[in-house]
Length: 372
Image 1 (cartoon, rainbow, N blue to C red):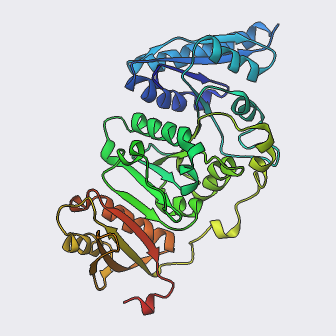
Image 2 (cartoon, one colour; image 1 turned 120 degrees about the vertical axis):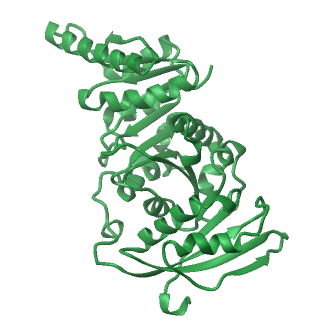
Image 3 (tube, rainbow, N blue to C red; image 1 turned 60 degrees about the vertical axis):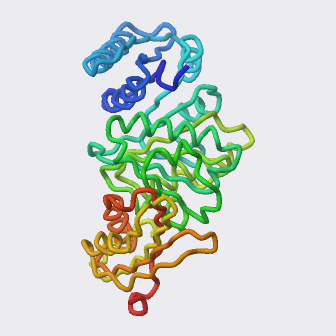
């Protein structure tokens, strides 16, 4: 069955219900599926509790149907909420479970006790959503080489499939960001999401902090490492505090990974995560475009796009050891932080028509005075 065939959404907070429904609808609509809003009430719950649960489900059903997607609400009786969610997912053949997260962790839990329990025992793909404060305008899919390990194939594919459905009719707005060394080739399912790839060689969360804006929707896969879940949640939430996050989880973590996954979770964001606020200063971003899929040499296009945000230094072109064309340019621009400078360059080049098919690497020059 397709990912969006049966999308189940457990609801506990009426304030987040509509936002979660919007994500569920986008996934289900792409596959002609159905959305199942779900609440769990304990056995012997008072009538008022059952009435509130039913009202929440009915309101969610109406929202989904107003958007033109089939919906069937469920009120499940179970003394353990996680058991109720897992049993309902199995009974109704859920192909995806969407759960809301407030964006906070503790030293014991990554998402909180309920979601952690469901994640750890679920055999249904999950999308854990932290809703932002603004409507989303762009979509970002960030990957590191850790995600491209053989064991990470399912998580990467899930993130790519979610991104494609959540983007709806705006595939040109998907931005693919790779981080770190970029030694491995991107899977076709990821490369097909966008007409170019942005490469920030810095650490994963740091690169996301530069690329993600407050009106972005960031679809984050979980790397198949002991710290993969922590990186996809706590560190990304620190770096992109305003964006909407969707954590794509192919399967729950193994029990032996639980301690490593929650280590350092719930701590306040370190001072290094609060870059900026010291006023505007000059920064230099060095952009290298690898042009193996580009038909025309875009030296002029690279310079033209970057000149819209700052002063462009010397542009050089060459062929690398594999015979592929490369162009490099430096742009001097005012910004409050190096992350802000990099984000400006990335946005400018994402709209450059003649850079379709390029892989674009971004580096921050340490000393602007020597980078002319």
